Amino acid sequence: MLRAMLWKEVRDLRGWFALAVVAQLYLAGVATGLEFGPLRAGGGVPFVDDFITYYFFFVAIPFAAVAGLWQTLLESLRGTYAFLLHRPAPRSQLFGVKILVGGLATLIVAALPVLIYTCWAAAPGNHASPFFWQMSLWAWQLAIATPIVYLGAFLSGLRPARWFGSLLFPLAGSLFFLVLTQGLQATWIWPMGIPICLGVEALLVPVILYVAATRDYS
Image (cartoon, rainbow, N blue to C red):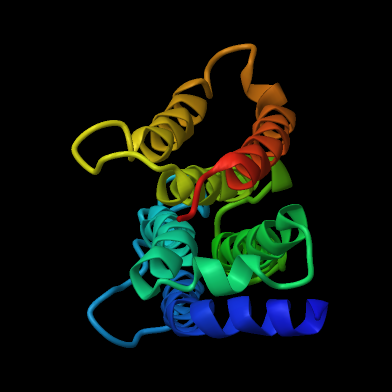
């Protein structure tokens, strides 16, 4: 039963996930010196003054939003909620599997190019500028915070609200939080960024499960 639910969610997201991973691998290749296609690395200090790092999140953040909405609105558009919820499993498990697959996919898409680029930048002889691991901290924090956008999009797609009303408030709030965390780099709060992001994610999951348990799907 659990394996079937996992495979269903993987099957629903695999097209978007494959597209995002291919894009991220290309961007990571460009960042490490690959000369293919229209983009070229700027040649600056890795994670400090190179534009390509930001492109990682131009892919990861839209993927997070699409994944969250796809897993929820797709069920409504196909009319499959009734079939899904009649499975012999509690709602918390059904939606927990969705969140597990979507959240893990989002984290992989966000963190994969950062990991590749960090390992390349840390290896001696790859570039002339000095590199310290803390230079990549902001990118790791943003990668860890990206699932907040996924959870916000998931909650938006799950809530029974109007498109022109409050439906997209959770998604908009998650995007605002993401911008806010990056704007606090020069403050005393910045070192606590990763624990704060993990805490917000831990709070959003039970909120989503509560909405999923109490929503009327008829």
